[in-house]
Picture: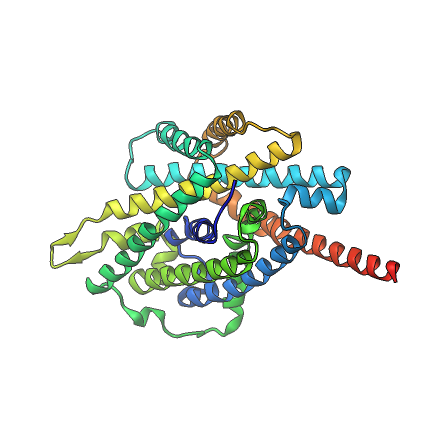
Length: 364
């Protein structure tokens, strides 16, 4: 299994912008939400540096192997299982989110179970083809995803729907609301990127990992910033805050000379691709975790098993989009993501530094 730098960039960018461009992140900062996203991107780059420093010490190991090496199996394996449950739970969030978004916007009378089936089958099939195929698929899809996003922003601008006065005043209430809004964005979507620790092992050449990762996260932050900027300039901060899927509402306003209009297909494809690839990244991390712990060579049964479990779990655990968002933003963004994204990796890096310091002084 091997990934090249372009495939790594594609995986990271699809992961970061997957479903985030659909929503108005940082909207608690009102018209300054886009500034909050930019600030959170800086925090994300700092967090990324911590993960990359850990990976630099173990370039040929994934997160499971690193934790076992640093903490030993008695502490490492329970922690690894917690990470696996965390990642798989987010994958279920993504599956449930896809069903909710489709029933809310395009397939209003379709049961979620019917929507889930092809989604689970497609994701499982792509993963069964292997990490190489998954990486090439991400590399192929990313340009089309970006083209659709930027085309949507351009067409809405040409339609005359953008009103930049809705972005004023800038920092009208000072920096505090902006900083408060930036904090949870670091947890979601950026904090979830700790899942990359399961993928860097497979990237060659190793020297490209740091540059490719920083580049991908930085550009993703700019794309999310542009999305929030566009949403607020079109809908206004107050209206955007009350919309469940602001980007879809924005796309539906596109009307260029009564010729280019009704581009709901763009919204459907963005939702499908964004959710699908983000979910697959989490699922495959869970697959590799199980296979590494139990030394399983054949991934296929594990992939199908996780797919079936996620289908059932998502169908019954998330009865509505409101409950889905309540659990997601209350339990995960505020509590779980900072622990798994910031706290635990920082502790592991400190332990690594202490071990190095001890070995250096012991040898001398």
